[in-house]
Image 1 (cartoon, rainbow, N blue to C red):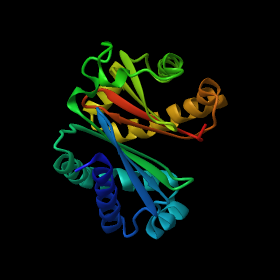
Image 2: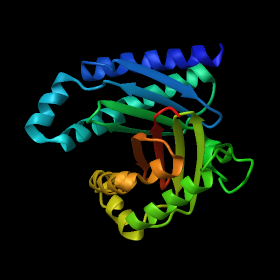
Image 3: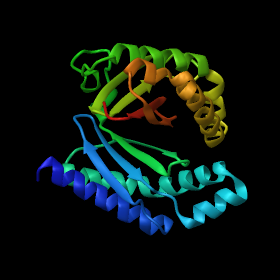
Image 4: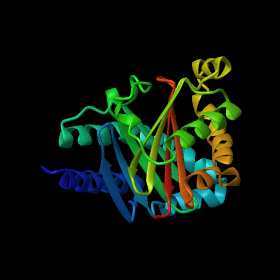
Length: 234
């Protein structure tokens, strides 16, 4: 099966699963398979139930609902991707922009970030402004919590950059997670980091193109985080 067919099947399966889970699936979904990753983009994904929930309890209530639901269905998405590709994806991330009803799901292969300081690492492919992007991510991460041990990135297509950070948690955050406050920590980190990442169009000025969306998620077990930057077409 060629990659294009695999991508179409993964996108269709994910769309159906989200519809069955939330009562309304995304208007459009598409998947991109790479050497180290699988990424699924969602457009116009916002159910009537979620709209009512947001009106009654605010945006964070929708994030909480999706966090709970995605914990249930993420393993199913991952298993399907693995069955289609024959590859293993041991980590799974997701994030949403509720204002424009978009979202992204990210699967990483085990080798995606095992040795990101090595030039043959799959996430070390060169692209224009790569060094500047990774340095800015490290600087902003340090402003939010601490400077990551490692930052690596790859341009997925003309409009999309995938960034992976490793080693970002400080001691007090690790203790909060140990005490069962992982979701509260994730909520706080999402608010703080997105404010920093969108502040003064820092990535637009580096890439010389308008940034449409920035998606961020964390895996506290592996002390790792993904960032997806989506821009306008050049």
